[in-house]
Length: 145
Image 1: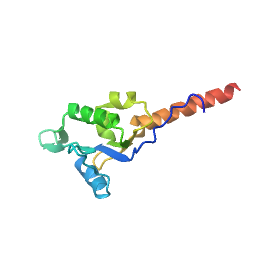
Image 2: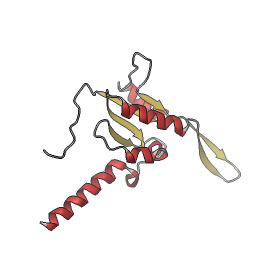
Image 3: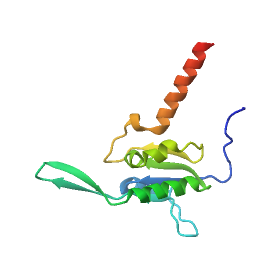
């Protein structure tokens, strides 16, 4: 088909993860983890701590992993040729939304997933918004015929 990007088929077989500790641990137990010869892993655990403020009766989250470290991991995973899918917790993707939204290659595919403490919000999902855009563009094109 003309105009379609060719998807590379070379040994792209790994799944990378950027998520909280519980999510990454679950996927590691399922066999997703990998450590290469340079001792680089295919995951980043985003650490955060929950604190209770008794004066305002609020719970807030303090991020221990820097946004720069998340950005660097995202750039590293998208540049590696052996990664086919990057699973990223949606609340983490929101921290680097500009990078996630500007990424437009088919491989590795970026999939936003919910985490234990942060529910999934379809309005922030970059893949879902692209699908909606494509379907709206197709419906406009079909109406013109």
